[in-house]
Length: 395
Length: 240
Ligand code: SF4
Image: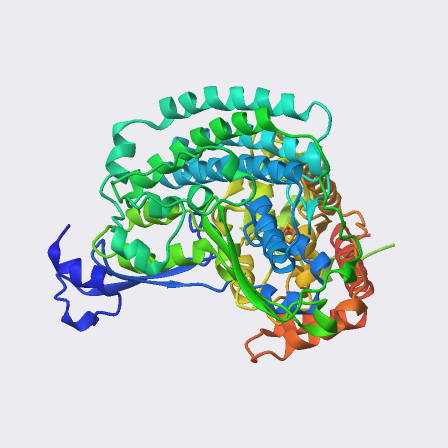
């Protein structure tokens, strides 16, 4: 990459007039409606020919005002709202919320419920990474250009996963299966066998995917594109696969265990490449790791109750006292944090403030650091490799 | 009834010539049937996917409920599409862009409201940043309720739209679909949208105000007037 773009990569606010352009600079808007912006997201690009000099991301096209809305809702009413932030991994979002309230109230979750949560979270991780894989290849190949083939293979497995979730929760997409203190639905009969069969199929499918996408063009388009140093990633608060692709060995599943992760061994996938290819490598390795963890969990699945000793059923029964705390779990995209201040309206039946820390928002902040010096066609590769979900960014 | 032929006006002089040719009506009806058949079986969709429903729309176009089998291919550009599928929550920031994309679509065009967010705003309806339903801006032909509606629902919706297209082409009366919710419930929210920052177009304002009275009845009466006008024109043209 040309070193004249380095100042723009170091500091997105570097003044444009210090840049000596070969031709006139051009302003190009990408989005908010663009087939590969992963939702409604706008990117303002300043171009010198085909090279990006400066990139400014604009967000907020999906701001639904959820954080304000939940201040008027009781705690039991909130679960269905929380799975709509990150609509590619609704299960983990619900869990983040459930864990936050349980921690605030000091509720102990039964062991079986914790296992069920872990199993659901890992299946959700596979589903989420599958969607990432299909959109990533779709962006690079285009629907007409053959990229859709990958999507068809991925969605075959995703439909299987939806069937599994539907069997447990009764819903394909937005599950609402976590209540405060446990699970609402127990695993149906024969479900464990179905999951095992699915895992076998999934494992075979990985090799199929590799045969489909591993070629020189894929390497050329991803290697050395969107290099994010570990310092930058840590400075921006990036977590999850994007951080691990920059060589930082950190995974909350292993380093700050929640659910039942302390009872299984999690092998964290780390790549040193820092580029889009490394992010691809990490996610692929994570899916295989999820399959391995799931097999362990299914073997160890204990019997017992799925809800706590004092089940919280009444909507107004949950009252979070005055106080504040931060809890976080590892979702498919990184750390989903919840900052909860209790003691709101109605003697604590509603939260005073509930802030969600979405991993995608932090990943989006990296866009203006990563893009200068790349061509326009690399935008979709960089954006796709970061795997943002706009619902989570804007909330 | 005798009609004064001299006062008849044709849209194009060719029509006057065509009217006198023997057997032409048979030919044109056949061609028309062919066109209708083609149109209704190739409703290309433009997914205005803003949020979760967009993912389900992708699934509907995936391999289980393959919407391609109904001839509806998803297109990334509004200029290629016949049907806009509004999938997801509409925010105040996004609404002008959605309207603009809708206006970029070539006629004839239809709109499907997919999911409760696109129909009425779902539970975000009362939030400061959410537009309560796509039909405050754009006339909707088919409502598909659900959160999100799955592929089968979408397929049923497309089927309804195909029937509607066929009926429209044949000049038959089509009962407009009612919004699965009363307009009254969203009045306060509508008020907020109307006087936000004065950037709404005339059309949006009119749509909002008409919704304020009674959404369904208003549009229905509009349609009655329109079709009555069409009918009288047609009769005039045929000289009866
Ligand atoms: S209707 Fe439900 S699934 Fe669809 S966009 Fe709204 S919240 Fe998401």
